[in-house]
Length: 434
Image 1 (cartoon, rainbow, N blue to C red):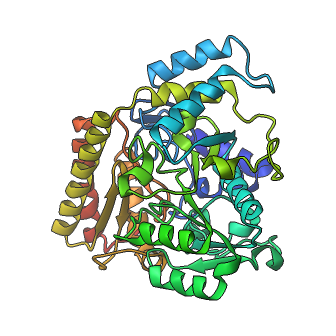
Image 2: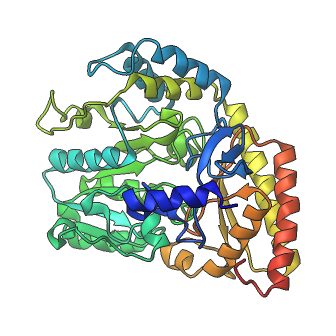
């Protein structure tokens, strides 16, 4: 009998480019056909073919409480009964802004938008407007959404498909985008020597989460902060992934660095589409209607989205983040031990409940070049082997994974038992993709 996912993919490909609405979902990074899902609960996903999968993607990070958390669902259902949106201001926008600024003191003013791309695009426009400068400095492998000026050596789907930039972006749009290797402060210093007077901003993922998971080296983020202060540039932290994922205060609290602007998304929407950017009041007050930098959005601050986000954030405590980190460490340690016991070169990274898996002999992976050298066929074999065991990792060797509070000791134990079988199978079959 033909799986329903196969039938749906055939239908989707006739009306949707590639059959998907975001490229990495296509499974080109791992081979095979994508799975269509119909339901999620706790740490599990259910496919349209009624197969259950233990999920380590979590909608790419937002579902820190797990799928369909009862309090989040209840809050959404109540909010929906009052209407879906009004195109006007609502009390919940104020409540969300107050909560975020409380946990992230570097954010004195914040504006809600509808996606991470909108957040980063708006933050960059604001930085240029405030400084009167043109150039932006970003890092190889860091993905900040699909705004034209940022699609240069980006991570996420572009790295998965080995595309260094995107067709349809005029060269003139990226002429003012400077690129440096992630974790290479000396390279950044050299660029500032050459172009510092025209660099409006540095934008960086504090933990690079779109070329797998690559933490910052000691002094890297603080060094960027110092350079921005020295040259009068705006320091933008893209915490779309890390914000409320690695701690209540985000990566900026974890690493003790204070940005001028912060971009948020993911968790603050509780699984619904969302974005936000905020920072110093003297910078944010350049935005219309107070200032000359224009930014707007019909659906920004949607009450249903913010209800889901608030319900999620109100469940989070420092103690729960400690639990998440311990659970993730158990998973990473266990996977590495089993892979190495089987004879595979395997590395793991972890920041809180974010993690990265690398089939690589390099003991320290700190940049895009090293990530790109990792063994993709090995990862493909691992991905499909685990999928057969009912475990769903990100369908790309270049994306982070996530653990939720719904992942218990039982789920971690099952994952490690399954990995032992898969690693052994990989060796037995000479690492051939199944």
